[in-house]
Image (tube, rainbow, N blue to C red; front, top):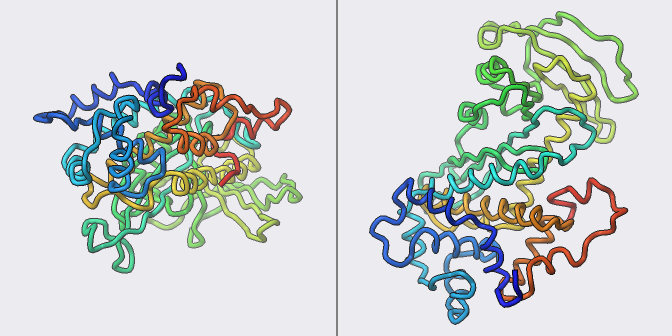
Length: 392
């Protein structure tokens, strides 16, 4: 990366344009397009995410003001707001979703050695949750939420080793969380962490039959018989019970006819008793509690993208435009994660985003920007590997 190139242009060199072209060809994205093709659409929206611009109008205004630099930035031309808006409405969102899937397969293996606090298990460990983006029901008539309000839901499955999203589903606000389990193909031996909104015994049993494990919160209305109980537990750790159970309600028992494990844990800090439900009988009861505790990483992921990417203010109204917008935001996160690993930067993704956002028109070599101020080698290893860090 020589110093004659703008930082944004250097960043684009980390993006595999050949793989992007394959995604475009798969859906005929550039059919009968003259100038503003899918690549230029992606680059301009990527620029908007990186620099935290709030609207398509802001993107167009910024690029027009720097029109003499666009070629050297890697942007073919500036266009007006309506041109980008029409592209977002009409070009298949799956182009960007497929490219996002490519980036996931590229980035996820790079962070497979990242540690998970208090967990020493070799299995793949995933956390599943959703976040809601409020919107105007008058503008997004398809995005119905609760109480006659508009809402878009983003369901995300992240790999806890590296906090890399591996599955994204974008729906309206009324879509029930547990329905997302029907869209996920379980990986044998993997452990899935979920809250009680995902207690769907039919889906959980399907996951069990695939050889996968789950840890979730049990609902207070759960009815069961205790088959066996482990009395050899240390209550000073917070554990209160470790039971093997069978469901007793006819419908639930039909949907999940096999044994389950119930672990009761008392959180002294919050003075709250938690009851975990799992099909994993191999890990210790304390590991079940630690596994669920690490589910917070998916909530941290949502907090991060909402504060550091343009997600809360949508750049379109149709389902296609909204999905395009959100997938390009996810692609931005993955590209920055890839740059972080490629340059062996010890900065967090938050810090890298801040630096790149204000340096897009700078000509400093990107390696110098992201590695000159490496953290002290004596710093805690966990902090060095943490993508988010604590800088919100």
